[in-house]
Length: 269
Image (tube, rainbow, N blue to C red):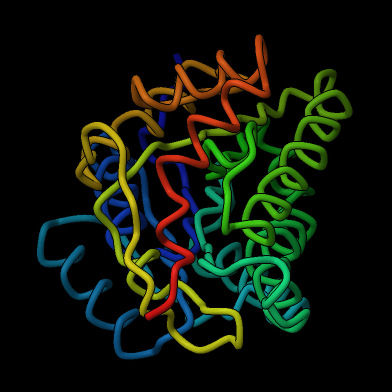
């Protein structure tokens, strides 16, 4: 088990429901929190809330799709807090739209946030993480280990994260840096409320859910323990585990079940 007492944990997408819960859970273990998000008012409110709860915290405004900004923020964290021990790549965006209709700009936006945002932040923090024998945690999805109808761009971005960070894990194995990929199931956050439609505008298509919907706090607890226990991969929820197993054992069966469960999302009035 890793000890996070007095360690500096950087969390991207920290102002969202899951991001905030991740900050709170690591803080409970004695960590200092560098909370980043792209909306200044939300960053300020989160920093204030955490400080009022007694959490050593500093907020940073960051658009993870801006590579230069990622470097500047990581440099500021080291200047302000002295080090970086853990990076939680949590910032993310999704879409719900059929491939045939979806504009390629939507794919770029999803990849920019989910994949390149994690890449940029990790590149900017990697020297500190190696120096401090730290940890990288990536928030993926069950869509990163199995297909998901109507989320071709989202699923592609999450599969790309597995390729990047799974390979990075092998490079970091002799440097003392852990790389953990966490695949949450359905969690009650705002990511699906802000899902993009085929044209990049917020979608009106309702989201389908299967099984129990976890609270942000429940998912954050699993993220914390996966990081602390140095797990390479953590697939969360019973539905997530079953999806992963069925797809690995019999992908045509999984695709039929999954398609029947969510195909109505793509139906238009």
